[in-house]
Image (cartoon, rainbow, N blue to C red; front, side):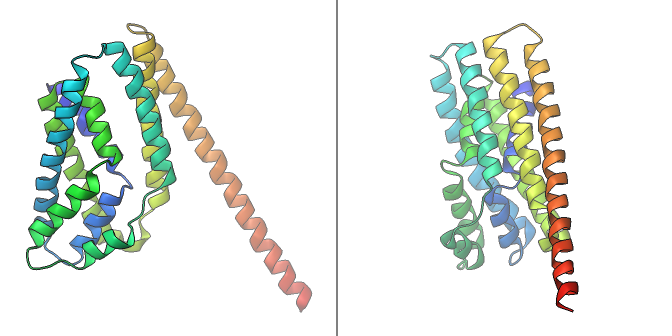
Length: 236
């Protein structure tokens, strides 16, 4: 149970980084007391993830373990690509977050419950519950999501609009790829060091690619600035 708890905590915490739920948490926190926001998030997450682990647990009973690991690995890679795509609030979600009626707690809990239905964190919880202790996954995933959203409230209050959202998204995506490759090889080659080696290779390649892309973008930005400066000098 403890291993399932810690694993699900880590996975869901990462899944929430850069997610629209964090954006909603920040928006709610601008108007309401932080403990009211956290309470609403906790209530919604507890119910949502209970449904998720129920689905994952009963589906997992009839599926071989190695198949679950392979499917989970592929799912986490998809979650990583989903995270790279980025997340933003729709007009309706933004309106819910900024204009709430008399009962803030119920409104916040309802908004987060509806936002999480079909979201990647819910799907990740279903996947984890299919091959791990359901109670540990339920507690770990709930605490992981609440902790991530609490972090978003704190960081958002301190840094405001200067939050490096792109860096958070890329970092979360890389961790998803690492989880995915590790789980995939655990299903394909159980009992070997392939999961660790594969995860290490993916981590190294992802970080290297991130550094290269960042360097190329900085070079292009400097070149664009130099080109504009040259045009100004020519006009003079």
